[in-house]
Length: 307
Length: 234
Image (cartoon, rainbow over all chains, first blue to last red; front, top):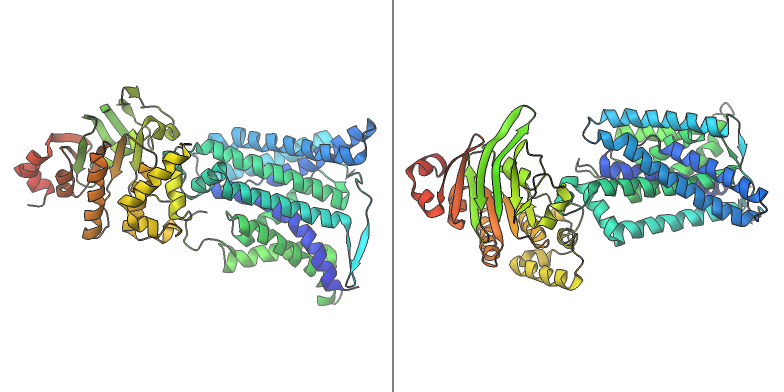
């Protein structure tokens, strides 16, 4: 088995998921300069809702494929409503507060959502039902599954959709203008509050999709799963240059690949002292290195203005 | 066209504008002149709802706009060209101009207005695909004015359009301001360059420390000894 190719494939899959979640961070940051630390929890709730809905529908005799599609839609709707509510309840009242205040609120909302999920879905690990028969394929000594292919394709499609929305629609134009200069965007007639709400809603929908992917990839879910996933995706956004859409996508993929290669080789590198379960180290080493040497990220603006 | 009554603007406890009353008639060119910190910019910002007024009221064409949400100001016919231009640096020139027409959906008329703006400022046409952040200061000022015109305002508020520009560029900008005014757009101009402002305007108000201390036809203020001494550097 070829470790390099194998880890590249695994990293690509994990990286697609990071990229989707990172987009949620970066869109909100781009427009309002806020790091929405509750975003990881939105993703987790997406996974949980999907599990619940698939369970309910299959119990009613709905075929599992159809149940999965409906569950994805339900997860997206719930997360969109959740993202919108977060903005409305927690962040909008703090629009003119010092920047630290909404940041602390975001951490608070993250804790609230985790606990809410614990109450609803318990402290236990939940099984994410298998929705398609897994098939395995071989390429150059490495293996990939149809689920992995689906995850990457779906991620690429939704990112392409996002780019179309941002660069080809009136809402996208308003979002770009508002992220560059909200005050002047208002003078042009842009309702910046609505644009911010749209960023939360769109980011949450993509987060729900990512949650669904994580669930069906690892086939397990837990109320704390959003925490680490959120931190990693945030790292990916910083790596690409927070506020920058292409940066979040590239940062996500890159982080996924770095992490997978790290996990693949850490045993050899440390003479077996550290195993692949230390893979989390790599994401945070990347974060520290980026913050030290290129705080604006790979694709970030060098001008000092907010993205 | 514009009726400002007892307008006050405060930053925290500091009053930048202390109850000023003035008006601009339809089709007029009016200047607000005064030294740095006199409250001119704050006045424009309060009219365009970038700032909240601390008191008083603003009417435009009979409509009370004192408490209008900021994004509805352009819809009521007022466009502000902000101090420092405020172009969107990572949109190209065309994107900036189209943002000016954001609230409109009459595609054919927008295209016609775009041609008109390019007629005023051929330089913008040449740079259509260039990111606004990479333009020179003068080009950014042209873009900011062009963008404001794309919203088809009835009243154009201009905040220090000459600031930081080379004399030739200033001349070009003010030529366009004259042309625009001749097409029936009402102009309220804030300038530190008092001579320039008085030359292009019909009337002017002189502000000092947040109050209007003097007003009259521009040609009279140009020869008024007090104005000459204080603002024309003579």
